[in-house]
Image 1: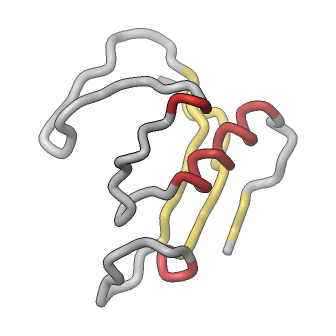
Image 2: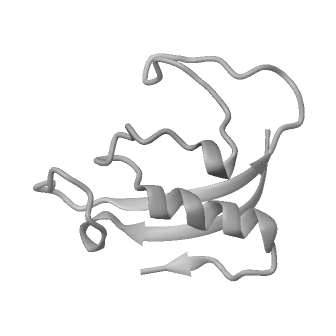
Image 3: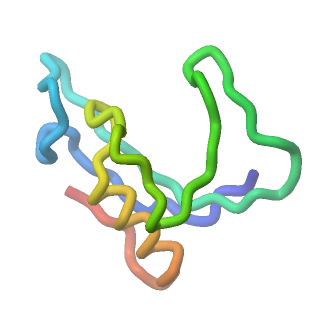
Length: 87
């Protein structure tokens, strides 16, 4: 995998993630290109799958990622000239 772009740096507290955390988190989103190998789970991942923009699962872990955030990443892929999003 190769990182193509830092697409977003978002303050978790400024987005409707639940539950709220007692500590502060900055979420970094990267657009990457697959250069080889295979996707597989690990210690922090129960499974790996790829989804098109119209196929995103509705049962996301909203403490980690929100549907509008993922949609914005698809926009970054379609429009690589977009600047990095910052809160």
